[in-house]
Length: 83
Image 1 (cartoon, rainbow, N blue to C red):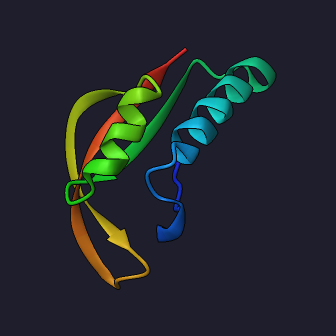
Image 2 (cartoon, one colour; image 1 turned 90 degrees about the horizontal axis):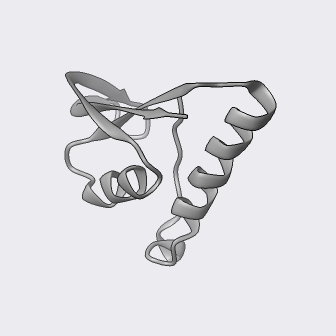
């Protein structure tokens, strides 16, 4: 499973898409991973864009994910990347 956070001053520069794509290549090449899961918060379309650009697909799964920084559960969608 992959998760990430990026400070607001760095949003919109493509840094997270580049980092996620590189991490997936590393996971496949060096760890032999054939799939990686992610959960993206419904309220965060930018995170959705990062995962889609990196090749993730929606699984159709939905759940409430606990967000530590906010101290609450928020709705999220499951996604998967297949090597």
